Length: 364
Image (spheres, rainbow, N blue to C red):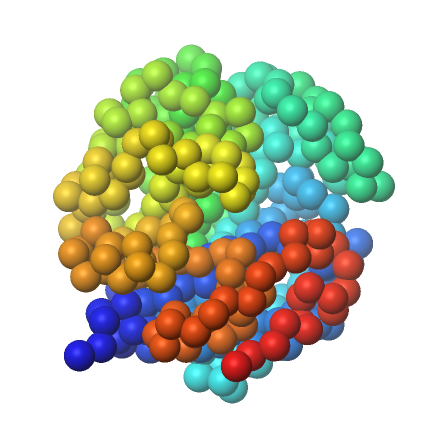
C-alpha cells in the first residue's frame, strides 16, 4: 500500500497529486525590474511533479523588496513573465501558488531609492547585515514606522498583488507572514512596539494579518489562500515574549476563515536561518499547534523521506514542504517514493547566476 505522502488529495480547493510540496525558494535570478528570468518557466516546469509548488517569495511593491534580483508581482511586465511560468507548470499537470511578500525592515534603501528607508511596525533596527542593490553587504538601517494611513494603503497593495497573481494564472496565493518579514514583524513583540490598534496586545498585533486575509480572500475564495507562519523562528532577529499565546490566538482566528492550508515552519530549521545544522532542541511546532487548527497543514523544516512519511501518516501534517533537495532533484517526489538516492545540492549556486545550479540538475 502506498504511503499517504505519495497519494493525491486536496489543500482547500487545490487538488494535489501527492503531498510533497516544493517550498518557496528565493533564487535571486530576476532582472533589475523584478521580472522573473527567462529560465524560470523551465525551472518550475521541471519541478511540476510536486503536489504543489509554492513559488519563490515575490514582493508586492518596490518598497517590499529586500534582496537584489528578487521578482515582483506589481507591474504588467512581471505579471506577463509569471504567466509564462504558470503556463509551463500547468502544461506538465502541476499546481502552483504565489507567495506574497513584503520584507519590511529586512531591506536597504539602495533597493528602493525612490521610496527611501525600509518600513516596519516600529523603528527598531534588526541585528545583522543585508545585501544592497550592488550585492555588497551592509548593516541594516533603522526602519521608518508605518503610519496608519500607510497601513491602510498597504492592505490595498496586498489586494492588488492578489489580483495580479490571479491574472498571472496561479492556482492560489500564500500570504508570507513568517521568517521575520513585515507581517511577522507586526506579529511579534520583539519588533512591534506600537501604541495604536496594531500594537500592544496579541489581538492588536494579529490585526493586520487578519485584515489582509479579509482583503484578499474575496479575490480567490478562501480555499485558494494559504498562510505561512514561523513560530519560534529567530531568523532575521525575531523574538516574542509570549510565542505560544500569540500563535495559538492567531491560529484559532484562522480556523473561521477556512483557508486552503496553514504552512508552519519547524524552528529547528528556521532558527538557523537556513543552515544545514538542525536544532533538535527547538520547540516542536506541529506538537504545539497542529491540534489547534482544523484545516490542512503543510509542515516545513529539515524533513527527510522517513520523517515526512511519518508526519503525514500520523496526522501531524497533510503535506510536507521540501526546499534545498527540490533544487537539486527536480523529480523529488518520484525519488522519495522509490527511495532513490538524492542528488546533492550546490549551495554556491543558490542565489544569483543563470542556468548552473538552477535548470541543469538531472532527473532519473
